Amino acid sequence: MSTVALSGNDTVVINDHVFNDFAEGNVVELTFPNDIANVKTGKNGNTIYGLNEMGKQCDLKMRLIRGSNDDIFMNQLLNLQYNNFAETVLMQGSFIKKIGDGQGNIINDTYILGGGVFIKQVEGLSNVEGDATQSVSVYQMKFGLSPRAIT
Image (cartoon, rainbow, N blue to C red; front, side, top):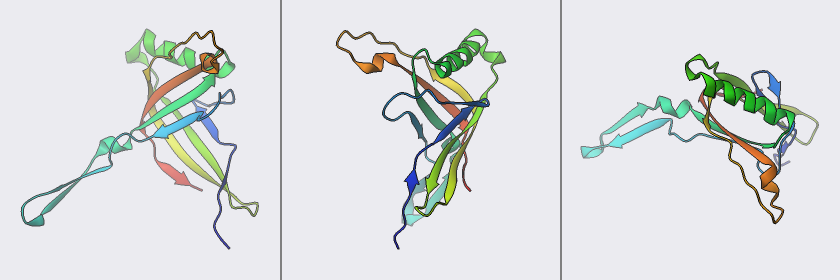
């Protein structure tokens, strides 16, 4: 029998807040902008390998319904960061993908997020042609650590 993966019902938690008010499309994007290792090859094929600690960082983008409870929660965290950056309590949380095997068994594919800050302000849009994205708040954060665990 072939291997299958059924995914859905993903969960995002930041600072113990479980999110529900997602918009359309890619509502959560977790990306790794940096390499985890560097490789340099020199004369005679001699090769040097180096661990790049920057590879542990991840970028998290969330698309929330503008004005929703989740948007209000995130905006409050963003304002706290703005008001006194040195006093900011770094965000922590998790992004959990639930993966089914087609036989009723589920595993959790979890990214454990630590040391998070907002890296961009929430942008705004007014559109007279009915563009639905004007009702979406996009939050962009960077986390210093983001190991992945499959359980």
